[in-house]
Image (cartoon, rainbow, N blue to C red):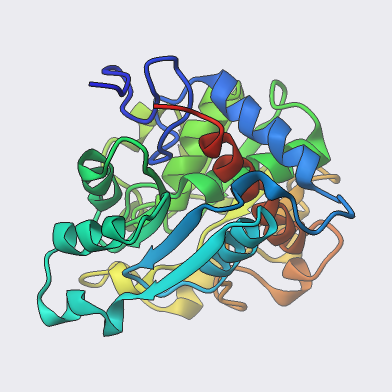
Length: 318
């Protein structure tokens, strides 16, 4: 087997071949991606030839605006040919199996698959079945992982805070259904963040979440005290089953980020949100558009992170 048996995301030399999850990735790989992304931020050159002649297939089984668009922009800036597969009108909706879809795309000489899927683990399944010269990037799978979102959040935090080793961070909201939260927690831990807090009602926390090394708070005001970074999560109504919340208004009252709650964090705390935002539910507009918000820079940095991941993979041999 040409992949590293201890981590199927890496080749035998320990280089990044697939990006499926941040869990278990060595810190040096995360730093390599963050450092490579820095070279793409603020550059006047709109196009570089690093993926010239390569075909990148965006295969999205779930709706997406920011992620799909930024992957497309990133691939085009690397001079790749980009093919967007709209799965709702593809053969998948006519009963074609996932593997048949992948085999057919591989036969079209794909070099890289960017995959979003509603079921956890599907990008891993695809990665196990593609040819050794094809790379797979997980653009979000079920509740499991969203590694490039986690990385762009780390890039954003590093940009404003420089160092992770003395940061106190809080992840707030629907942790239970959030693949972003899982990716953030693994990244914070790997990069040496000493205190990771999660703030949520009991109904929106995974069982035994403390085993991930986080401190759990149900009172938002207590949880935000003296934090350096507040990362809000989207309420994932489409994944909720049963009455996990009394109402959106009730959630906003106790867990929505308002100016008075943010005042409990450090004066120079920054606010992140992966988008799309539910204003007046997870976050007040005065905070989302305020001076401590770094939500729009996150989107800009997302392009650089995705360029970095694809260019690193393109430079590795199986």
